[in-house]
Length: 86
Picture 1 (spheres, helix red, strand yellow):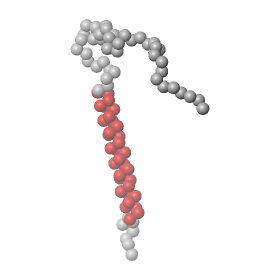
Picture 2 (cartoon, rainbow, N blue to C red):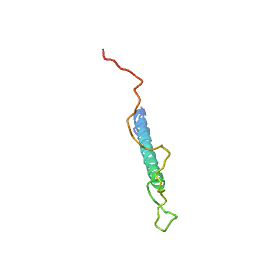
Picture 3 (cartoon, rainbow, N blue to C red):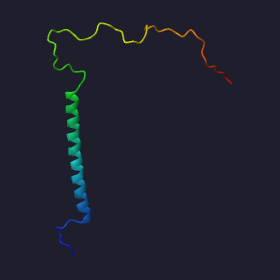
């Protein structure tokens, strides 16, 4: 004879599983909030506080990136590979 107020093994397991699910949900919510706050604090597209107050931009007027002349033209040499249809 078991007393009525003692939970069965299945009920105890369900109670532990419910607690674990709630803990996991809280942990996920906290982690999500932390990621959102970190992303907002370090968002590279946001201007934030700039040290320059004159309104000028710090972009370079030169478009030189070291990629050569920048021309796009087809190759003048013959292709090295041959293909055949059988």
